[in-house]
Image 1: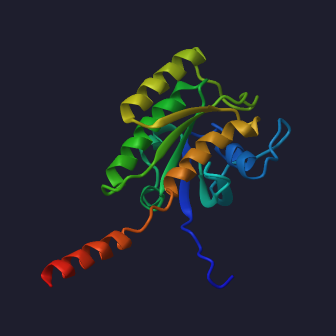
Image 2: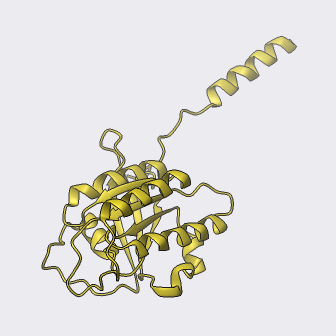
Length: 209
């Protein structure tokens, strides 16, 4: 249709430490094709486009999701600057069996706050409880998952950001955080105030007469 309007496409950056399941999470959300046998290669950078339900009567909006290379070691505060400037929202992912991945999110969030230029940029945190791969390097000193999750919840409350627990092998667990994020990026259209403005102008004209 010629009069169809193309809505704004929300740009969402997914980031976090290496091996926390970012690519698998996006692949599962968009395509639903991830299982225990799926082999995914390390990401340098990739872009996905998803049509996401906003939770408002079946209305759907488009998200462009940017997958980034996992950070590691001293790279905690080295998320490339252009990644901090263009997104409309951020999804920070960590592995609740590895406290290092949670610690890294604090550095990333600090960088986001420094570069957001006073505009409101939604940020959500996902705890990916998927089973670790045998080839992943486990933390040197295992810490109970509950302790790490409690620390994450407390940090998110202080930062006033939403914290979700998801499992990359269970696609429905990914729906709520991305539906909420999409709804924030595409708020419902409010009624125009022009009719009220016209009424004010008409009343003013009558009083002048």
